Length: 88
Ligand SMILES: [Zn+2]
Image 1 (cartoon, helix red, strand yellow):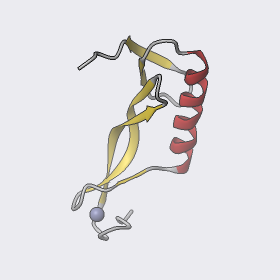
Image 2 (cartoon, rainbow, N blue to C red):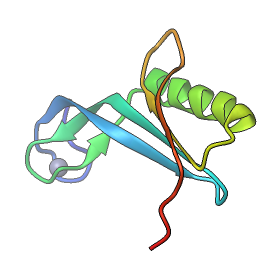
Image 3 (cartoon, rainbow, N blue to C red):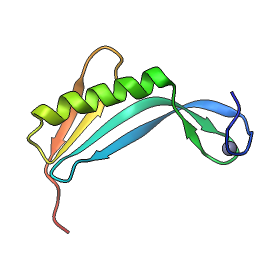
């Protein structure tokens, strides 16, 4: 797979996906992606994208914590941590 920005080589990697809904933030960790070795651009497979959206959509209906951290999984929703936002 080639980077669509610089045509560099994309390597398998993982990243975190941040979703800020104003009153709550959902972070999905360990999301599989492809990362460009040259410029650092990230690309996601469509099925991963769809799954992350599904996890976030499910959680935002039920989460009451200000911050929820979820471990990416193709089959289950694993919340690893709930936290309150710290006032600066
Ligand atoms: Zn690149």
